[in-house]
Length: 260
Image 1 (cartoon, rainbow, N blue to C red):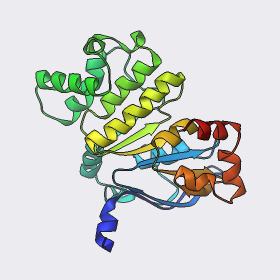
Image 2: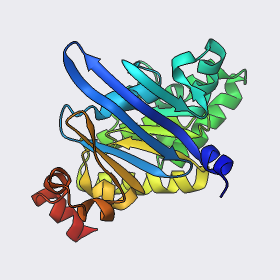
Image 3: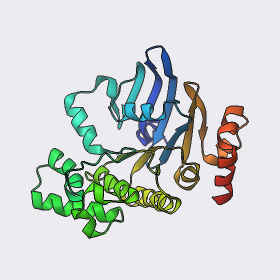
Image 4: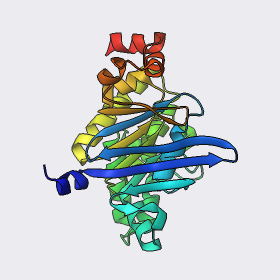
């Protein structure tokens, strides 16, 4: 692979990112690359800045200093036209789904298509039904409202909305949070299927160690405002770093290894 090929293979580049909230330092000189087609997980303890880093990647927050490039576009110098282009190429599943309660599942999934395309309402409805089916929901679900859905169904409906525009990048914030083990297993499998069938790059923030073993190609562990470790789960559990060992080799981490 040439240097040019390697550069094109990186879809998110973070360089020397520092984030402060008042006197609190959340990130200090963090750098990482996310490669096309991988499932990249961001983990860490409470307050380690996992979701903050994700928000900086999806243009919902700016770091104090440093650079974030997404799909080759530097976010610190982004134009309005580039913002619109990126929003069409990025799908986001928020932790609690963020579905609009007054809209049906069909209407929720169709919203990005109404906003970013000039397609007819009929075609948008047809595409929304297709995305709903891709996430494993029945056709009847399209007419239901978020309040009528189980937690797992809401996650899937929100995921259908996140992939409505056929994004190149999919960001997931705690995708299995609040799900029972069976539903979480099903959601993990769905993430793998969508990555493979749609050619997605997936960036996920999670505290679910079972999910890390099942779906993550690479994992970055945040703590003390820096990157404590990075690599495959196998790499991380074999790390000699005490902080990494403490995070992954606790009782929950060992149980996940046994079940993998």
